[in-house]
Length: 184
Image 1 (cartoon, helix red, strand yellow):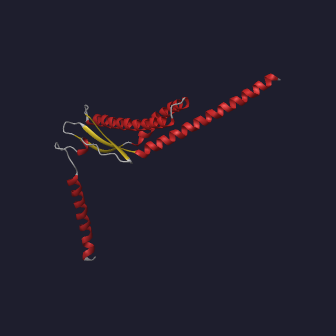
Image 2 (cartoon, one colour):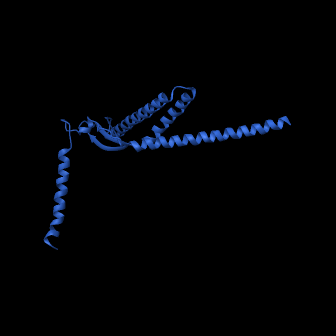
Image 3 (cartoon, one colour):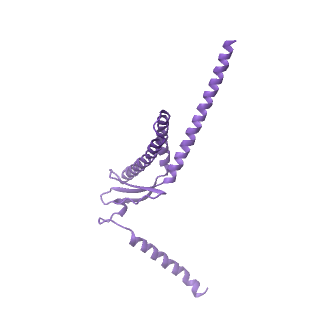
């Protein structure tokens, strides 16, 4: 082995340690030593939404469960608000008609189902246990999950309408034949 080959593992180790130390040095913390994200939720992007929640229960495990649940609830409220706002905008642009109001009811039902299904993608990014045993969690949610869940629910709704339309056509055809036989 040459001298250069012997130095390679040492250089890689030094670089790795330097990167780790740099990462630790730049991590923001609050004056009380808690992570910065506990008081300043990371800014959501076009691809990811973030929420923070905390809880203090009788045990750290219960606190963690409660904090995660609260964070998921916050994501659910955000998702629901966004879907509802989109529906309101759609209805306003379409104009208020009986058909539009009926469509709004269907879309609102779709909204509730979409949010419920879409929240399956919430992930805990960070967890922090304070000195007083309060558990803080930072969760992320891929925005594409909400879009995908909405598309899936819209397709399901479309399939249901097609099935209902088919049932109605079969019923009309049956009634026509039944009424035609009465005339004879």
